[in-house]
Image 1 (spheres, rainbow, N blue to C red):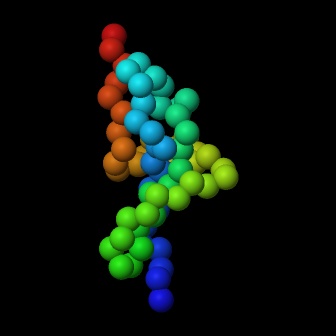
Image 2: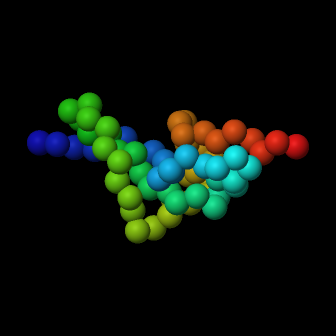
Length: 64
């Protein structure tokens, strides 16, 4: 039976230069026990804390 192994907040499209990551459309990158990554959107945005603590899908800091 297919089961979820991990879920990570992930943006729907890469940010534009200088775009704040909190303005992006977010979903979840879901990994199943078969090892198949699958991108799924959720109706509720991940919390700011979940976005800050994600391991992947990093945005470059805005230029100063």
